[in-house]
Amino acid sequence: MPQTLDVYNQKAKQFVDQYDSVTFESVHQSWQQYWPQSGDKVLDIGAGSGRDSRWFFHQGCSVVAVEPCENLRQLGQKNSPSSIQWIGDYLPDLTSVEALSQSFDLILLSAVWMHIPLESRPASLKALTERLHVQGKIVITLRHGDFDDGREGYDVSIKEIERLANQVDLMICLQSGSDDALQRNSVVWETVVLKQRIEKLE
Image (cartoon, rainbow, N blue to C red; front, side):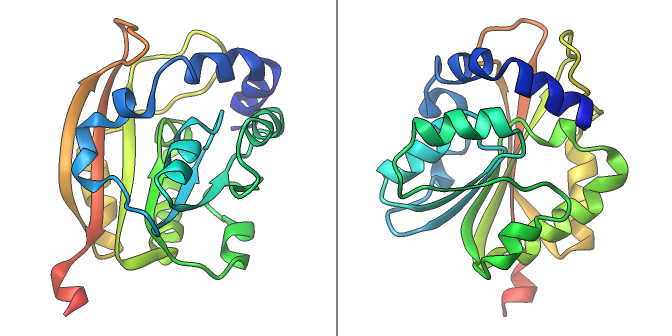
């Protein structure tokens, strides 16, 4: 992860321009039925340029934007309404998020999971589950495609997500695939939406 953060820090402005060149709607169309409503609390993990956090805010949501890369975080915060709370924090610990003592209606990990080493993923999903409101959803986008710029990426699959979800009493309520919004032929995406098991809610 340090190597990946170095790349994001060094090319922060380039990544911000890239992320902001596409809309929230075009990137996240596949899970539209679970988009948050006004008044919902949203946790945006790996908030990057703040594109998605700003969209949530303009829908009337309360937003906490988590971005471990300092330069990205500074640019994202600069371009965002002051009501969005920006935090420098890391999976799997999320120490600063935990200190907020909040639960969230939606937790988004957009273009994050492939950067998390396999051995850190069980603890990462557990930490997210602990911050999830009882009726909340976790949305994870899975990138398939190698990096050619020094960033580290690890294998991802819906099968792995399902196995890890079972360990923390979550279930998949939506899975979908989509082409890359930035029109990179070598990259495709899958999206998984998780919620707590029905028997746990009863």
